[in-house]
Image (cartoon, rainbow, N blue to C red; front, side):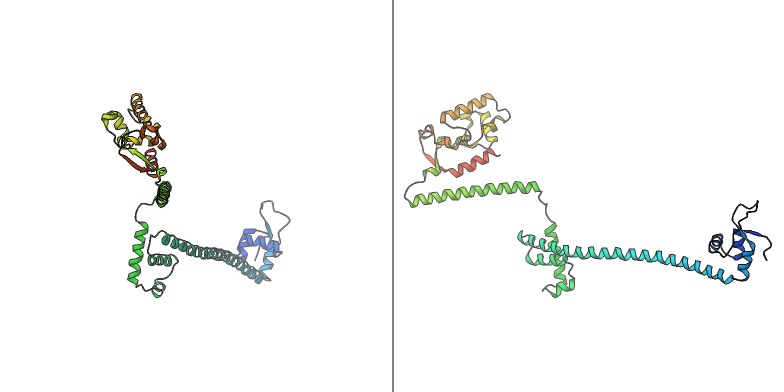
Length: 318
């Protein structure tokens, strides 16, 4: 059948009905014999034609088996790749499942914290808070109906009403909360001073004596403020800073007046002369007790010290 002494790899492959690479594999397995002597006109692999002929006559079943093995190897390789892809998918699903379990636990904790906050801040009613918590915990509608006196319609109405409460209005910023906290602390301090002053007055009354240390007697001459007395420019400057009575000059800071627009040296001299006439000093409540004030004709008005301190804070923080 084979007429030439040597065959190229492609020729041998064509005769045996296999690929050139399979011919190389057969040579490695010893099924075919490669010639050690190369013909001058053949540069590629040369296969002894006799070995090809022998394989065809005697061992053709080996070729078929080899082909079957190659096909099976290809199939096994494909199955292995498919197995690795499925394995990777299962590992990813397992990780997602673990994350899902952890997320569910975290949602439950967060919903409980939120519920406590909503109750503490009186944002929602107890029933609204309970419903929002159950929904955040992924409770089903059937579960909520069975464990409450609510109908499906009630649940929908209650839930959307709660959401409207939670999302309505502007959310305060951190700095605004700090300012509000500061104001509340100041108000609390004022109330404490009032309470302490009242306790002293009650105690003094019980002991049959006046509590003169807790009040300052201010004559009516210091209860008024008019432009004829101090000049229009000074009068307007004091009004800007909230000063409504002459005695309140002892409750304001000197520096605040200096910073007033159009409040020059002459205005300050006029204010200082007026204060000196009554013995008043800037930001000094005790100066209202000086002899010049006490020598003024009455009537006098007793003003509690805590009221004066409160007014002092208002004027110094405008």
